Length: 453
Ligand SMILES: C[S@@+](CC[C@H](N)C(=O)[O-])C[C@H]1O[C@@H](n2cnc3c(N)ncnc32)[C@H](O)[C@@H]1O
Image 1: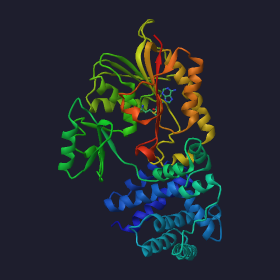
Image 2: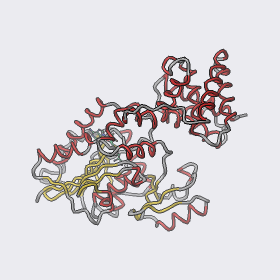
Image 3: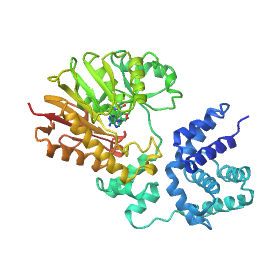
């Protein structure tokens, strides 16, 4: 019989795998949840909240352990450190957990996991936190703005610096705070199959509320807990696809037209490929290219479920791809939704902030430039490339585009995108940058480039 302490024990096991075996958060969590199918939905959601929240907040939690413990977090026995993080996380961030439950279950966890002798340390540290927290926040913050934001919001310094290159400190705080919230779910309605109103009503009939999203006429945002995605109304019938609002803006910026030939250079799992197919009313050809054959299977599955026929799957490295049909054949539009560091989606993937590094970003920036240079060889005179990333990092965004334009004088930024919903997010004519704390959607960068006639 599952109990609340089971949900904490499962969170503990998942965190062990994540910290000690370097497992991905979603994979470790999925594994422990599958090992306890009897867990109620309330218990499941506590396990998820603890694991995602603690992975996100580990720098803040460790800073508290450093301040309150006899030993620094890094010097604590690894399992004790996890239990201290779990207790502190509940006390600091989970209002719905009574204080006594947070402390007592943490002490129990220590006893259950071979740390009986250290149970007193857990009790002492958590009670010391509570004692200090009655007067003020026990967390001590340095004056240096980078480390201050890094500790307060639990981000590595280099990410805070990356954001500070683009925003004032007060906004970086808002942005980091936004990334610590649970992710929201947006749907893109397949207007070839149904209407926004029909989906709204079908959801409401099942007690699921939604809101519309400004500037996006095809989009609904879920506003209450929805349960399993594939059990929501209209899933099997291909009425909609889960896709963040900002990702939807990218395809609107591409503005594909019926009858055109389009290459989606990095297509998997097909969120934007299928959106292109919907916008061209499934009339035309879309080459869905990707390095990963496994991920391309997802494109196929999504296209089938949404009943779209204009998509052709093309595995391979888009850096070496030539447009083959015949030597004169060039395409109308290319979408290059490039592999990137994902710094615009830190709320959805809590590991990224700890896994990503400046070295990896240097390599990504090179890959992005190579992909863009190659994509330019596929496009006919007057044709379009939309370059997009879900990151907020100049090296992968502005720098890639500036360097491309310098070496390709026959290309320019198409800045007259006034009728595109993406234009509402322009930071400078033609440069579209979605900032989550301002726009309440994933961070994204996108630019529309046009080849001269
Ligand atoms: C940001 S994801 C694309 C998301 C997709 N456009 C969507 O909306 O669902 C980037 C993709 O680039 C692919 N990729 C990475 N390097 C590549 C390369 N050299 N050639 C083609 N695809 C590549 C990855 O496999 C990954 O699927």
